[in-house]
Amino acid sequence: APGAQQFIPPQADTLDDLRAAAAGCRGCELYRDASQTVFGRGDATARLVFVGEQPGDMEDQKGLPFVGPAGRLLRRAVDDAGLDPSHIYLTNAVKHFRFELRGKRRIHQTPDRVHITACRPWLVAEFAQLKPEVVVVLGATAAKALLGPTFRVTRQRGELLPWPAAAQHPEDFHRVPVDNAGGTADAPPARLLATIHPSAVLRADDQDKAYEGLVTDLTVVARVLT
Ligand code: URA
Ligand code: SF4
Image 1 (cartoon, rainbow, N blue to C red):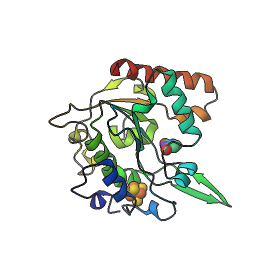
Image 2: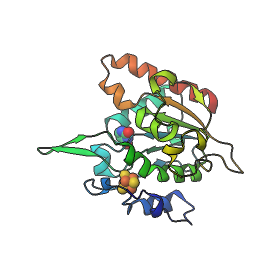
Image 3: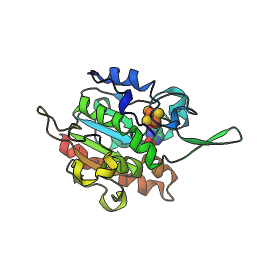
């Protein structure tokens, strides 16, 4: 797969420029079956960015991230953690919906490593515009995109982590420089915090407990940002 890099206009200097270009991305095969590219949305001056996995069925139809059930739960957790919902930016590690058709139903399929790697340049480009202070990594796919394949969300969730150096996982970062992703002359590198994905909360046996865990992790972020 050629990857998204060649679809990123070198002179793009706003998120809107990136969003417009991403609409035509063919960096991996996922664009073929999905309805549209689902780019990030939210406050362009946000200090806090959330990275999910990929758009779901509803997001694919609406063209906006986190507008379905997982998004609703995330919004509630943001509120309950005391974070300001109008000052966040929401995006995904992979920007097309990957699914399998069963009859007329579109069943979510977890993106593979090739999709994560192919799509990663969009994420890096978003960070370069946003220069966030904190990036919240929701679940294993986003963690793979940003922290490498050996990172375990279950083991390190809720911990504020330094921005990962490119050299740590050269095979994953796939020649896309990560150094511009939050660390620039006018902004220090972002810190990361990994936590459970809101969809995993919805699937948990004990939903209340899983939800409480998500809010607890986000409270760590709220403390950093106030
Ligand atoms: N799950 C995600 O990871 N992202 C979305 O946008 C919606 C559901
Ligand atoms: Fe491009 Fe990402 Fe969509 Fe693949 S998933 S076509 S890399 S935007």
